[in-house]
Length: 481
Image (tube, rainbow, N blue to C red; front, side):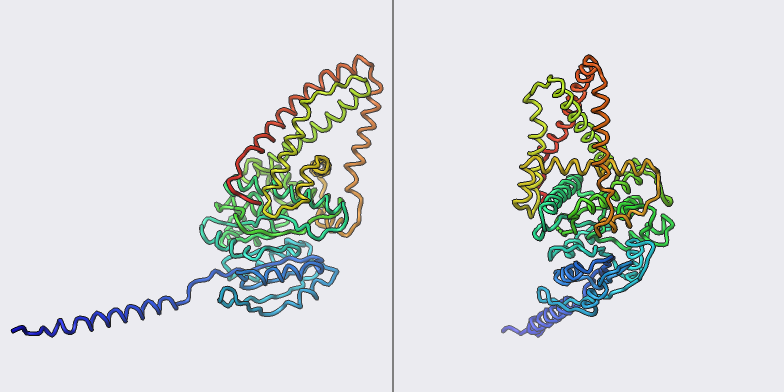
């Protein structure tokens, strides 16, 4: 006769109760709030009444809203404050069934001698409790997942000091052939620069202020180690380059995003493009060389400046080869001694192929990008424009004269000033001088100049073509810019 064991009868009940309690425990754990990084967005705005609405709408359309947005209007004379104020207040969005809220504040700080730098520092003081600072220019919009990508990337590694979006320019709303040409050139310039940084381990020398996210801890470390009261200082004409260099110097990484994309405001006139590019180039030279202003120290061997040095050497080669070619060709034609050699077609063909590959590397390429690349002359003319900016920047540095480049750029964007014509006028004057000198030479001296000049040009062109070919065949490893 079997005797029932009461323990065995109770065992299933005990197991069931334990399982029920475990399920309830894990359910409570799932309901516990998870930590969500706090992102404070700062938009320095100077006369951005035409674009600030699109910028704020772009931010409110993000799949990851910033926790707070501060529009810091400075030195403006238009309706930027009034337009931005229409968005002031709390905004709630339901994204992927999750409710997100952000609040927009608009600050008019009036006349500010530090301009954009002052606006950024003011905004920084307003988001002290945030984990990350998102800097957005008043004319820059981004694709919907940009902030989500930036947050995921910067949160994935505590060594990250800042990450820049992949920049391009929206060319769908352009007026006139000059604007179309200049924007096509800028799109190609951005694409080539972004790809170089992608292929360097995504190391970004410049965390452009147009759309970049910064670790607040990294910014505070820069302030402490550099003995600054604010992250940004006016010791440089390129405040974002200087800050990027400082972030790298204190031990953090500066990267370009693999996915986040943003469209910046393009320069649609020669005057405004000249002011912007000269400011950028001159500011970079200051960082490479002992500075002209404040306490900026030249750091020629800093890792963030290696690409800058390469760009400047490359531009110097472009100046040399083009100037020599034009002078030697003119001299040979004048002496009736020019002989066409088909090998001289190799450099422009490789340059054209490189431009086409750059167009293919753009994620949002279009027919304008390929037209610009295939018609050799637009890209060549844009290179001459860039040469003018390059020469003006180095001339400005050599003069060692303090100039408010922010004011010059603002003036140029308003359509004032003619300093952008200086490279063209200088080229005409130099050409006239060279023609006069050439006519004073005897035929034998002219022959000697041509005999020496063409081989020098040939060797220089071979070196330059080799580097273009290496860039042409270098794998892009799946990156799209």
